[in-house]
Every structure is written in structure tokens, then in C-alpha cells.
Length: 105
Image (cartoon, rainbow, N blue to C red; front, side):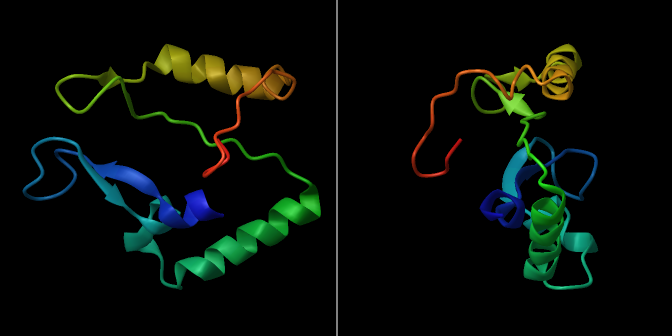
């Protein structure tokens, strides 16, 4: 729920006035501007659904990698599709992972 509530994302050029390059930002539930209720309400509802249906959740970076804007690059659609396919096939569920203790990535 922490990652869902935090909604670490970026503002993109062409989507907001005055934004000319990707700018890191936080947007609760990845859509704060469109939420009529408090973000914790949506987190609570999501948590209930996950428990009820015993659902695995994957946080997938479909944005930027390799450094800040101008240095790195957008993650390719080909790589994003491969990640999604690996989730659907169960391959990632059985993969070996390193746990990063603070955020449990």
C-alpha cells in the first residue's frame, strides 16, 4: 500500500502547462488529481480486494531507467511486454530475488 499511496511518478511534457521535460513527482494512487475521495480510502479498498482474492501484486517500472532525463532512456515496450508475459506465465513468481529491506523491492 505504501507504493500505491506514494504514487512516485513523473509529470510529462505535453500533459501539463509549463512542463518541458519529465519531472519527478508524487501522485497518490498514481492518479491523485482524479480522486474524489481521500487516497487512503482507495488503499483500504485495494487492500480488501487483495486479501479477499489472495492476489499477487507486481510493481512494474514502465517509465525511465539508467539515469535522469537526458542521460537515461524510456523503458522499451518490448521489455515491458516481456515482464508482463513473465508475470502471466508464473516465471517471475518462481524467480530468485534480492530483497531491498526498506521498501521490500
